[in-house]
Image (cartoon, rainbow, N blue to C red; front, side, top):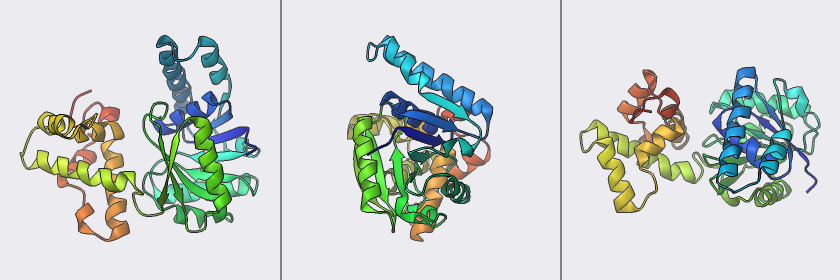
Length: 282
């Protein structure tokens, strides 16, 4: 594996976290987003995250400073022309991702792996937007990326064994545990998680219990570290809705139909932590 420079496209919560873990592992990172304010915010987020590690004594201040120096920001994809590996972390929208992969395919060297952090969109559809489907795979990090160990690595219909091997080796360098998933809607994590979150929202809508009661039952009764409604707020209710729609459409199964309460909350801008209000106030 001869990877020194990693490109990360998308400077939101996931993109900044992915950029951080690659930089901490010693890679030079080029973080790209069309919005300069997002890039500035991402740099601040990374600096604050690393600062907390310094305060806890997990890393020395010198490591924090060296990590930040390895992250450069840009607003154009052209800066990724010499990247050795690229991870996409833009909005969870199939058309947007396909357009991005098509653009990256024209910029990156033919041997460069293009990985998607998608949480539900089929990898094969992204590979089909390129001339290198054998080099396209899913690399689904968990949020918050610097703390969560799991990475789902998804093999598309034409993803090569060599590309998968590279992704698994990278996860090892990052200190992550990679688990392979078949290319099915929602993969493993969200195929199991989202129906649980959806059912918890139905329980709220039908007055079975308050959000606090439902989360307490799942934490104390099922030993979950976080209740499903708190987790939904953390993920973003709009993201939960998007994933459920992908599951419903991908499997053509009504059991994945989003709860009407979730649809209403997203429609009125109640999105969870990111909007300051979800099932809880923030």
